[in-house]
Every structure is written in C-alpha cells, then in structure tokens.
Length: 265
Figure 1 (tube, helix red, strand yellow):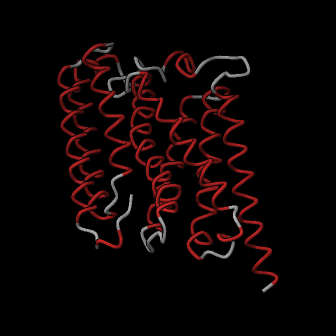
Figure 2 (spheres, helix red, strand yellow):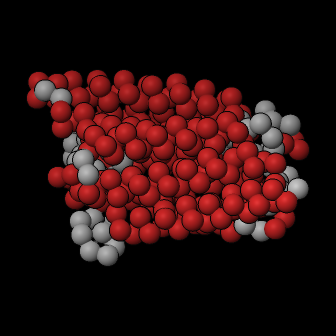
C-alpha cells in the first residue's frame, strides 16, 4: 500500500514537472526571453507562408486554450482525490510525455534543425494518440474530468494533427525539387484527403468532438491563408473547408452515438 502511494505521488510530481518544463520551454522556444519568433524560425519555414498546408497566423491562438487546459489538468490531477485514480494511473505518464515533447518541439525549432522538428512533432502526435486510446477505455466520472482530461488532451491531439501536417509540409517544401511546385495543389489536396480519412475514422471510433474541433479550427485558418495570403491556392482552401466540415460532422455524429451517460469531449 505504501509503495503504491509513493508511486502515485511520484506520478503526480512528474506531471507537475513536465507541465513546468513545457511552459518554460514554450517561453524560451517562442522567443519570449529574446531570440527569434516562431514565424521567423528555420528561415521562415514554420510561418503562415511556409507551405500550402500552413494555417494563417490567428490559428495558433488555440495554443493559449490548450495550455490553459493542460495547466488545469495538472492542478486537477495533483489533488489528493485523484492520487489513486486508476484512469490517471493509466494515462498520467503518457500525458506527461506529451507535455515534455510539446516543449521540446519549440526548443528544437529554436535551436536545432527543421527535420528534427518533424521527428519531435511526429512523436508528440503518436503520444497523444496513445493518450486518446487510453482515455477511450474508460469514461470520465465528472464534468471537470471530462473538460480538463478528455477535453484538454483532445484539443491537444486535434491541433497537433494539423500542426504535424503543416510541419512536415514545410520540410518537404524546402527539400522537394523545384519542378514539383507545379503540382503543389494536387499534393496539398492529396494530403488533406488523408487527413479527412484519418480524422473521420478517429472521430467515429473514439466518439469524441474535441479533436475534430481543434483540427477543423486549423483547417479553417489554413483555408483563410490560401484564400488571402501566400502561397495562394483556391483549390487547397476549398478542400480544407470541406475536410473541416466533414470532421466536425463526424465528431458530432460520434458523440451522438455514445450512450447518454457516457458523453465525452
């Protein structure tokens, strides 16, 4: 019993430490203490003009909501009432890993190379996918838990999904032969079709709306970027809107299919 209690306290402490690292790394990586802003990192590859699949600047404001949610989760899980919670025992370590990778991505973008940012964000996406799978094995018992655990991590997963697409596209844009630029619209739409298939499948299987909403948010601003900014692409913008609407519809349908007492975000 004592050993189990110590392990639970250790888990809670690791999550607090991970959240602290994430926030400090975010401040350092974003240039808050001096240095280059995210939009100017990697020779502008990570800016709203970095590729055909980069969302417009306002899309990134969702990070504020995600960070607030993760901070709220960190505080909530540290309460004595959550110490021996079986759901937190199963998922806590993975959420801690996601927060570490979150902060590590910004540090990597600030100080290392673009290919490494793709690797880190891919690991982050895989980790968050694992979080969503684990959360799907049991339901939240209270609305606060649904919001700070399922909701916050669902938004994180959904946003990182589109962020991974944008990050990888920025890298491919830099390394692809110049001749491929003529088919940029085709490649962009093809990638969005993949996002559609994966996103709709995930929404139906997990029956969660938060990931779909976050991904749709990014896709909406991607469309704005292609309609009003550079590189301009009407086809890509229209495709992004179609995918966004389909994802939200799939997420809503999935939620409606859940038992009434088992509504999740």
